Amino acid sequence: MKKKLSPYSRLEHGIRKRASKWLFRLNGPEHGEVFLNQRRVFIVPTHPGLLFCVMLVILFIGSANYNLSLGFALTFLLGGCGLIDMHLTFRNLAHLHLAAGHASAVFAGEAAQFELHLINRRKYDRYAIWLDFIADDRPDLAQAADIAANASTHITLSTIAQQRGWLQAPRVRLQTRFPLGLLRAWSYWQPDARALVYPRPEDDGPLLPLAAMEQNDGQGQAGEDDFAGIRGYQAGDSMKRLAWRQIAKIDADASGTLISKHFEGGAASEIAIDFAQLPHSMDTEAKLSRMTRWVLEADARGLAYAFHLGDINFPAALGPAHRENCLRALALFETTP
Image (cartoon, rainbow, N blue to C red):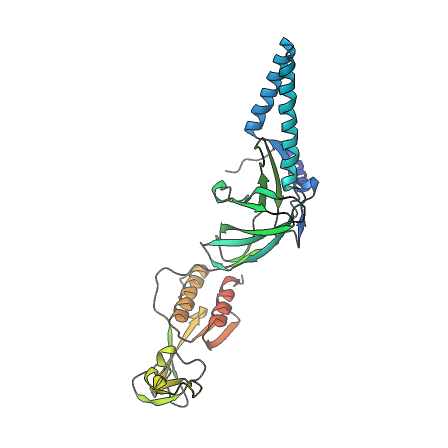
């Protein structure tokens, strides 16, 4: 049971949310190239940094108590090193330019990978800048980048795609402890990138759906019972139908014409992947998962297939473009209430 917040708690939560939104720029995806100005970079001591500060205090008190001039010299020398480290740590991250790159389509349950570009337009090198997705909270998945002066580099961060549709890139955390590790500088960035997530293919299911279909010329594409001869290659012919023996006998100088086997089977079998023909007992996601598996299976076997999903109707075809169009339709399908 969800705990009910008091008016004071709701007010505190609202103020904290507004402050975080203003302070950390939590305003949705940031379009174009993003510049990390000084207001966007934060810096705090690390655990070793806190111990370092405690050590300086002890050294200062001991030097003052026993009037040790060398103790004062050592204290202020170490303090100066800490101040220089603070400047270098902040400079290592500030004034960096960021841009979102390409994100390839994946299937639900797989890792979606987002390409991120880091651009350094300063005259000094940057080292050990770590990037990760805050939502994953997996330090082991963080990627480190070194960027030379007046150069750029790119890294790829991944996150698990839980469901089909568009997956917005999670918020990115950039942080560095260079050079001494006494302080940590960090910043946040919401890339304007998204990946298309296809439905997860069904692990096991029925065979491809075949719809019997009589052609006017009596020639069956799928039937191979009655061999009728050979003919010139036509677009859409399966690789299995190529007459390799006859092709091998053709003179190499005769333009390398391809030849296909010709059959007269009377009836052809066309693969029809139709959402409306699936059992009504299946839920929508299960139907889309089965159709995804059929699309991949038909494409892998080199079989032309028709596709019907709601208002989308693709005639029988074959090839990467047809496969991508079908998978995209499955990923973005929305049911009407």
